[in-house]
Image (cartoon, rainbow, N blue to C red; front, side, top):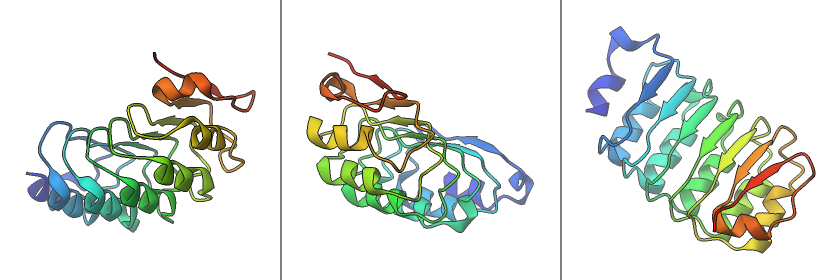
Length: 171
């Protein structure tokens, strides 16, 4: 599993790891957080890592080189998103996918207030549980000077963003 991969010396120079749909769970995320990989891209969609796994990844200095992080459908709620939003190690992220989790207004507000994710250019929050007011706050946050694409799902149809951001919404 993820634990064995994370401790493999043969994979120390690995830059991209795709473990989508592998039932990694929070224990596997914890193992990846302690790995010796020098990852720039990590894809963990549909693995049930939950808040504990998201926090482990966010708190790992070993993942400081990540530019792309895909955590779609992982039962991550506000606690996990808050850990990501305040992480001193994820400042290089340019792409963050949090689609289909359990993120509500509190989690989106944590992202909007984050000063740690200034490199974000792409953020996917589709199919979560937040409203248009906090989505507008996020879309107009001064903390994301490089943001170019913000996927919000149906609530995105109600958002008025900065002029340089493309909001994608679905009906």
